[in-house]
Amino acid sequence: MAPLYTEYSKIHIAVDCVIFTYSDEKLKVLLYPRNIEPRRGDWSLMGGFVGDRESLENAARRVLMQTVGLSDIFLEQVSGFSNPDREPDERVISIAFYALMSNDRHNRELVAKHNGEWFPVDNLPALIFDHKEMIESALGRFRYKASRDLVGRELLPEKFTIKQLNNLYDAIFQRSFDTSNFRKKVLSLGVLLQTPDKETGSSKKGAYLYKFKRDYAAKDFDRIVKV
Amino acid sequence: MAPLYTEYSKIHIAVDCVIFTYSDEKLKVLLYPRNIEPRRGDWSLMGGFVGDRESLENAARRVLMQTVGLSDIFLEQVSGFSNPDREPDERVISIAFYALMSNDRHNRELVAKHNGEWFPVDNLPALIFDHKEMIESALGRFRYKASRDLVGRELLPEKFTIKQLNNLYDAIFQRSFDTSNFRKKVLSLGVLLQTPDKETGSSKKGAYLYKFKRDYAAKDFDRIVKV
DNA sequence: GCAAAAGTGTTACCGGTACACCCATGT
DNA sequence: ACATGGGTGTACCGGTAACACTTTTGC
Image (cartoon, each protein chain N blue to C red):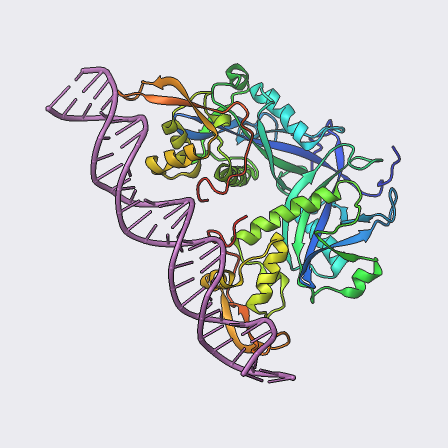
């Protein structure tokens, strides 16, 4: 490896992960009390520096593995944040990613060990640096994805009712979709399979549980919901 | 500035600019024969390393100024490209940007001096590294922008006919929009102003020239065209 | 008059929205 | 029987697409 670019300076480069989950009918983000100076103890996204021979995405997956014990989950790059003064003491460029994680899959012990806590996206605490902005960008990108692809598989249990999916979309877009129309729209996409089972906890009649078709891969529908 | 992160390695970080213009009824990208090894002479995007105290966007604007003599143009970050082997000889992470430039504004001498050439997006030559992929990502993002905001101001002369705008959209989306419906849609947005002048080069009747309203800022329309 | 491009009008259809209504069941 | 949430049906409205039609003017 020839030292071709020696006259140009190198820069610390990191990734930060916006980890979304869905629980208690809310869309939530995983935050940690920062464990190094400066601003130790303030809430922040979990991140890490990018290794010498590591892609950004692999760095993000490594962070996910260390954070929630999973790495085979949906992950998408959002944007680079590069204001020279975004960290007060040293120059770091950080690339934000967002990840989608079903609430029942993550390693709770691992999260607890680092004092991670889940915050609803509409009620975030004070965050270090530009992490608030990262979350907002990530949410924008996630909404775009959810508007063109049914995102239930990543965030709901394997089997779920249409109502649960409806509530998920309500939480993502912070509005209330008409249940009748939502049901029709979603079923018309042809990617869900009705199971024989019913969910009976919340109603007397019971609601059919659905799951994604086995071979379902992310599609690009015309428009599931308006953004 | 305390050396906090000394145990983590720094990485070369660059920006690459996908510069779009519109001429001869085609959407084109500016490419250069690479002027340093490796692969000197192959076609590539214009890029540059990010300085110590420089944001990614400022680095991209600096590249634009060096390349086309303009920096006050539309610029948007696309994505980071970070495969450790994307450059054969040394590790460089590059953030792709795209820019929109009216064909009559750029500094032709400056472009010619570096042997820059414009290529239609549907007929690109062989490109170095992952630059083809960068252009495709940039085009995707640009199409998204054009679907929600009228992009004529950035790419057409100050005054233009509806037909020209129609042709621009045809070129961006590589399809043909119905002229009648396109006209109605575009005028209904209420952002164009009819001028008293007519363009008579291509027709006997002559077509009215329009321009963007003085106070027009990028809006987020529901949907101008389907993506 | 006719060709050519600009510009207007018409119609059919589709998808989103609102909302009324029926269904199944536990109490 | 009735309350409750699940699920279906329908009617309206606006946007989109396709395409016919009118206008203007140079030749």
